[in-house]
Length: 307
Ligand code: GLU
Image (tube, rainbow, N blue to C red):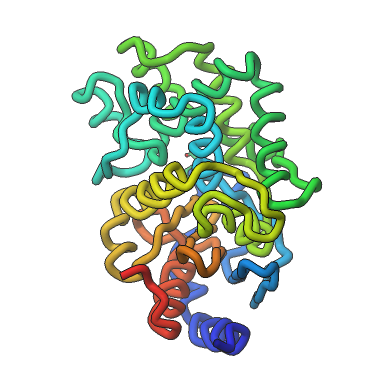
């Protein structure tokens, strides 16, 4: 298949969509990102990759980082992790407090904010401090993306903390139900830092490759996680990766994927490739407007959805 031609076509078709959607502004540092940008990359098992648009432009990966922290925590805690966080779609906005209250402080899944903060809490317990946890997450990300040059943006992390009342409230609510182990501020700071990691679509599609290939990086041969865990992580991406628009994403795109409010989306096509797309304008659910349409066009043109 001529992937470059398909990506070029998608880029041409997507251009009118780049003015639609709205850049996230509840984290002020993200509001400064110019909206009319677009990039899409895919990586194949032999290491070849294809890109279009601003694919070297780094952006805030935000909730995409939750795929990596979930993978790490699952490897550390195995099934015990599910005592702290479920795997059901929430059908609620990403930062909702309501469901957490009536479900006694156990978040529905690791990709809504409450669930991801719980996962971060388990990692802080494991690594022992905020600094060591961030180091552990960065080391893991460097391993899976075969790239030593990854960082988080301290300005975005600080901006999120300054406006992080909701995330702090979620953590406090979980603590009140006994589902929290570490200092609330330290844990939410760790969470904000991993959300503030910056990557481009080339790096992200490379980092997701192990999840398209049953947990083993097909380029290096390294086992990153077990096939069973890779299956479960993909399943949670499919059912919970786009908040309350997860059903719509499965319906229109038909791939396991995870979005972030920085405008990035990652997706896997099992045993074929991993993909990443970025465009900062978000739809009303907080998912990239043009990015979602681009992925829908990709699976339509290639007939490579999982269904
Ligand atoms: N750091 C963001 C928050 O907690 C992540 C949200 C997202 O990317 O969906 O609000």
